Image (cartoon, rainbow, N blue to C red; front, side, top):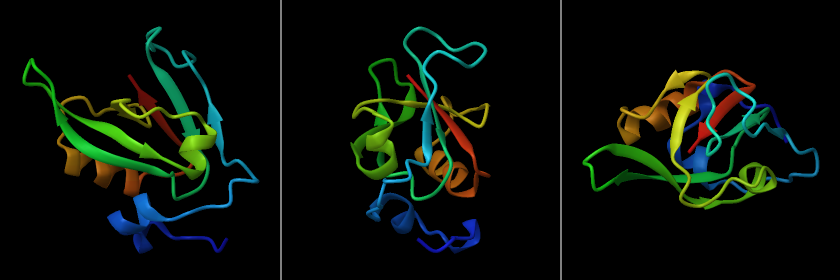
Length: 118
């Protein structure tokens, strides 16, 4: 796969490309980050696309968040789950950020990119 500059990525490229995962450019680090809870999972992505489809979500307590609605490629290899909520990206809290801010942060993130999910 040709190397992609993060400036060349669009939202569509980020979530919709298929990827040969034979090299497995991900590392699953459950409960390994400082401050991670028993319910959180940290996935370190080493290449793009990550293979997650994200959608905005709003919970009963009116808290907005970004939730995983589909996985394939690297995300599937790292066993990212449908329904997981993005909580941090490279240590930056995403829980109070809008869906668009979360996607923008993921597209712009340097690799390796550590994403913590709840």
